[in-house]
Structures are given as structure tokens and as C-alpha cells.
Length: 537
Image 1 (cartoon, one colour):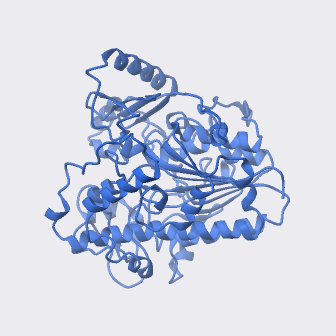
Image 2 (spheres, one colour):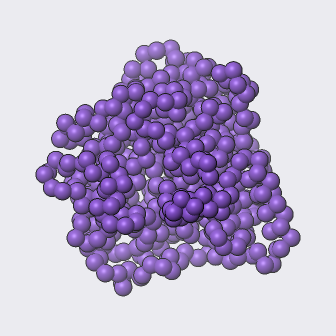
């Protein structure tokens, strides 16, 4: 084994702040909890509100707008972003492979606008020597579209296997990579990017059965229980005084179709549970091969919980036609694919395509406001767990200082003692935007730095205890994160000077990193006869 640590990044998809056991959940995640018990948990780590931008930021240490992916992977030029990882940035895989690391991506890529023809935005062209996964953003768990090995489409492999389940396949492939590389005197970087628990709600009968009845008490009782666990764990300390239900959602006592509602959350929990089981297999493989001690493991989510309702707009048939992968799906039970969130469609099997809705997303984000796509805490707050037995971390502690995805790359480079390059492929490389949190993981006082966000006009800036946030097109709001992480008391009217100062800072940042004003993006779409939902992807 080499002295340089292996690096394992594990990313969940659309998982809320309180959806794992060590962050307050009733979902059983013993393997992730084990990482937390032997490592460090963050209470104020932030993503960038949505899948593709978060993945771009995680891998490059830049803000997503600098990478070409400001919204999703649709090419929105000339009035938006190209939607593909550009050649001006450099990925963690490119940096570490040049330093002698074996590199692997297992799971979701979602950083290329063209997923059918090999191009320079594919993972194999951005530093990953091994790739097995999907190029698209979402897909069936039983027959995943755009399933690729290396640069070859292998969708047929899943279709031909009666017991294929994408989450399990990701975990198994990761274990195989670890076993193969354990014999070489070469460190590895592996990025395991699950699609769980992103919609559609699909899981095995056995995993769903494990959660039967777990959600019969409803979202109000369970939200209070999660909040109580979060308080008892010390993760939120005194930063949240209230834990209110989303005012747009009914009380559980008033909810219609309670059995169907509970089933939706049972399937979602099963998806998280199967991911945790796979993470346990990866950890066991690292242990069996003598690699766990010197492997830097990070677990996080790409955005907050997702409140999207399926079909996203229009009818189920129109939705399927806009998604060729769905139109081609032939469930192996011989039934037609059922798309939508309605009681007649009971989620779980591969012939259903549904999401769990806003009320359950509100539970997932306990105790925060709003969801994926927003820059309020519910959209951008994520668990982060860091585990590295040989790394001298302050194990078992909670790190309360705020950090975000741009800080992951400099942390990994400091841990591996690999320098960030000034040039690559005969071109200059943008300076990194983040700050290493490795010293803070080892118990040193964290260094203050300002955090920034923008996604489809929703925007925020965090400096110290103050967070200025805007839900497009509404005015800016100001919150004290030391006492009000639930963002219930807007202090903007009381601190106008601070608001002006932070707005000016945000404007300077937005201009520097190339944020395309959302008004301009919308104007371009309207000129083409399209609407805001189409602009937002």
C-alpha cells in the first residue's frame, strides 16, 4: 500500500438533510452511520442546489457557472450555458491521474449535453480511466438509460438480467474496482455517484417490506421526531427554534389517501436503505483488502430533497414522448409504464414512474425551508461525513463551520499532497475557488471565507453568521444562521446597510464567475416561444 491515501467520494442524489440515521432519520443507514461515528460530521456543509451544477463544482473546485454548467446539461446557447463541462476547467480525476492515481467513476455523470456520441465532456475524456454508469440525469433503476461501460453503451446488460437494480450494480462495480486495485502499489481515486434516492420511486419488494408501516403516523409526527434527534445529536445546537410544516402542504390528519402516501415514503426509504447497504459492501471490501485505514472517504448529497411532481408538466404521454428513454421502456412484467403521482399508481415496481411529493420532501429536509433548485437551506444544505482513520481527524466530532462543494477539491489535494496545476493540456487553468477544510477536520480553527450561490435566479451569499438569500423574483432576505437556520425571521429591513454590502459582494462575484442573469435566459426562451419551466430544465 502506498503512503498517499486513496480517495473515495460517495454522492447521493436528491437526498435531504435529515434522511440518514446519524442526521436524525428513521431510515436505517448503519454503514453511513459507522462512517460518522469514526469520522467527522458537518452541520453546515452546502451544495449548489441541483445535480449537474453540484457535480461540476465538486469535481473542479469551481463555481458551476465557470465550468459551462449553470443550470443542467441542456445546451442553452446563445442565451444561456453550453451544458457540458468545458475545456477551461480541470477535474479532480485529471489532476490525480496525472499524479499517478488510478481513477474510477461508478454511477451518474450528468455533465455532458450529448450522451449518445462520445465527446470531450464524457468521463473517460475527463480523467477517469474506468467508467461504469449512466450519462443521463435520471432513469429507471431496473433498465437504466444511457448505461455505459467505458465508451460503449451497455443498456442491454441490464435489460437481460431479471434481478438487475442500478443501485446494487453501482455498489458491486465499486467493490470490483477496489479488489482489482488492491494488488497494485498505486493509490486510487473512486467517485461513486448513486442515483438513489432520485425519482422514480423504484425498489425491491424485500427492501420496501422492511419499511412497511414505518410512515403510517405521517409527516408531522416524523418531522418532530427527526427534529428532536437533531437537537439531541448536537448537529443543530441552538440554531433552530421552530420546525414548521411547509404551509402549502396539509396536516397529516387532513391528508387524503394516507395508505398511498405512506407507501411513497416507504419506497423512498427503501432506496436510501439499498444505497447504505451497498456502501457497507464497499467499506467491507476496503477492509478486507487492507485499504480502509488509509482511504479518505467523503459522503454527501448533490442537493436538498426534491419536491418535483411527476409528470413534470403536461400529461404522462407527453412526458414520455419528451423522454425517449421512457417511451422505449418495456417493463419485464409485461405491463405498460405508468407515469405520475396519483393513488392509482402504487410506486415501487419497474412499471411505475413516480416521485414522493412536496410533503415528504419537507420531511426529508427537516428542519429547513424549500427544496432542490432553491438556495434557501432546504435546497443547499447537505450532510457531509468525512472518514479517514490514518488522517489524524478529530473523530466523532461535529464541524460547525460553513463550507461548500468548491472546498472539496483543495481538501483532497492537501490530503494527497498533490498540487493544483496552473496549466493543463497547454492551456491555463482557472484558479480554484475553494478552501481546504482538512485543518478544520484535524481540530484547528477554521478560516472564514464567503460562500456564494446562484441557480435559475435563486441566489445567496453567506458571510460568517449572515446569509442573504433570494427566491427569484422576490426581494432579498437576511437571516442569522447562528440562531435561525430554519430562515423564519427576515432581518433585511432591520439591517439595510448589511444587505447593500452583501448584495454588492454577490454582484461582484456573479460578474466574475460568469453568472448569466436569469432574466436574460428567460428572455431568450420567451423569444423562442418557450416557458420558464423549459428554461429551468
